[in-house]
Length: 218
Image 1 (cartoon, rainbow, N blue to C red):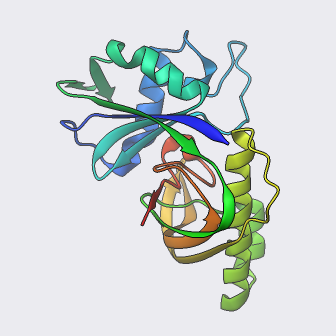
Image 2: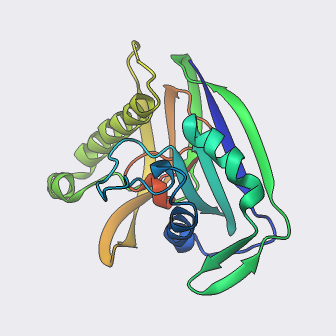
């Protein structure tokens, strides 16, 4: 299945990785009348729970917007309207911005793909963290591999790609602590191997609209 992906970068602006959610807040508010895809809330205030088709990231200090399908076309339509960023009251004039749109073919096959996490992978919610914390090291690896498979499947489902083949995934990751909504959470850094193709800088796992779980092919 082919999907459209758009990536917008602001190479002259440097932010911290944790500023990704502030990017989301800024653009979601600036263009709130355009589409709920920008902030995942409908006009009545209810939440859009589907996979985020517009994602906000800071990769190697560079602010990045990533859109898929309708989100990809939405970013193209807004590209010329982006003239500055406002992060916590600090204004950054946009002197340069790059846009790249491509067609990606989603597939699960016999080929193995290697990816690294460019930002922390939030694999666990509160419920399955409790299960995870009770496991030994071997069981934890199996548990995380299963979470990774589910995360990839959720990404595919969010893009309406029906998977027939079995997704296989093996993670080599380390635990890290991160602050999420003023709470300390366990997240992971590292790499993984899978038979599922994922587009560059796609997000998998929890909180991908805020930049978590951003992957890059090795």
